[in-house]
Amino acid sequence: MTRGTSTPPWPAKLALPLAACLVLAAFQALAGCAGPRPAQPPDMQYGLEECTACRMIVSEPRHAAAVVYADGRIERFDDVGCLLRHLTEAAPQWPSAADAQIWVHGSHSQWLDARQAHFSHDPSVTTPMGYGWLAFGEPGPGGGLLRFEELPAAVSMSRSMSRSISQNPR
Image 1: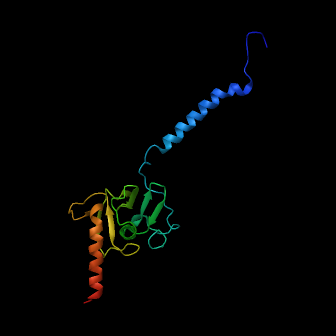
Image 2 (image 1 turned 135 degrees about the horizontal axis):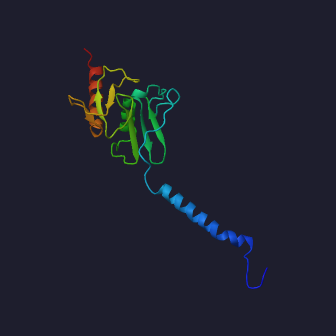
Image 3 (image 1 turned 180 degrees about the horizontal axis):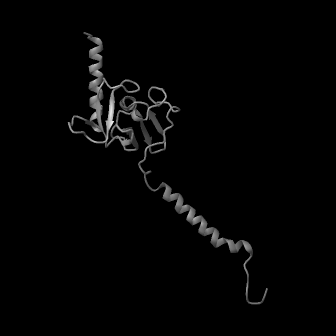
């Protein structure tokens, strides 16, 4: 070493790069927590995963539905009717549950945001659990389809009608 110049010991040389790395890591961690996750449907392993409501295997993509919660928890359903039953029984505050993304498959087996979808109830249509609820991306030419926020009343009415029919068979 020459006089007048000092070379810091090797740990001191690493202090600035180490501090920069720590600050960068802190910013990345905060950025990951800063906002809501982007809306995207969950991955489904058809033929392997159980329906949250009925415990049957989710096997038909065209009738599948899912709820993705803010905490990352995912509930999967084999029938839109199972989703509706679950939401009316387990989450009576729906559809105002803002912490959840609710997904349904449309008539062309594409995922749709349930809050943007249109729904039809036709008991003659075969769905995995026989509920007969179908989702569509567009309202259709004849109208008559329900919006997501209208479903609680429709589900309640269809239950009342089912009870009435089963108690008074022709």
